[in-house]
Amino acid sequence: MQTTGPRFAAIFGAALALLAAAPATAQPEGYEALGGIWQENDWQAIDIGPETVTMISGGDSWAIDPTNCPNAFEHDFSTRTRAEFVEFLGLDRPVSDGGLTDEDGAPIADRILAAWPEGDGPVATLWSYCFNEVHGGTVYFIGAADDLIGIRYSEGIAEIVHFSREVPAPSEEVLGDYERREIQAALQRLSLYGGAIDGVFGPGTHAAIRAYQESIGDEPTGILTRHQIIQLVHGG
Figure: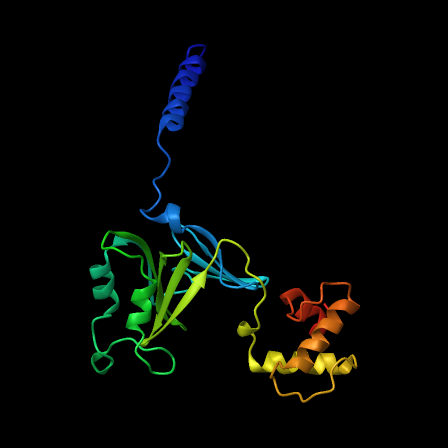
C-alpha cells in the first residue's frame, strides 16, 4: 500500500501531462472567419458556432440544431469556388427550370452572384439547413465589403441578408405594418401625433417621434431604437 500511492500519482500525473500537451479540438475549416455574433439589424442577430447557428431576436433565441430540426439538419463548413457555389444553389438554372427567385418572383441569381467575392478562388462558407416547421437553409460567406452575407433559401425563394460585427443604426425597414400602426397609436395616446393610423411614417410621424425622444431625454433622431419602441408601445 505504501508504493501504490506514489505509483498512482506518477501515472495520473503523466496522464494529465499528456492531456495538457494534446492539441485543442480543431475548428471546422472556415469557422475562424465566419464564427461568432453577427448583427442583422439593431434587434436581430445570429451566433455562428462550430456545430449550430443561434438566431437572436431581442431577448429571445432559437438554435438551428438537431434538437430543433429533428427531421433533417445540416451544419457544414466548407470552401467553395464561384463555380461550386453556382452549382450548389443552382444559380445557372432559369426560373422556369427551378432557378431561384425573390419573394416577388423575380430572378435573383445575378444579385446573389454580385454579393460573392470577386475572383475564382475558394471562399469559406457555411451551409446551415433545417427541416422541421421551417424548411430551408442559409449559405453564409464573407462578401466583397468584408461583411457577412446570408443567402436564405426556402422552396425556391431566396433573399440576400447582410450582417455586420457592429450593431447597425436603427432602421425603420425592419418594422412591419402592424408595429408601425402600434407606434402611431402610442404617439397619439401621448397627444404627440394627430395623423392617421396608417402605418406610413411621414413627416408628421417623424416629428412626433422626435418629440417623444425629447420627452424621455434621448437624442431626437426621428428614428426609434428597439428599446424606445418597447418603452413607447408597452411601457417597458
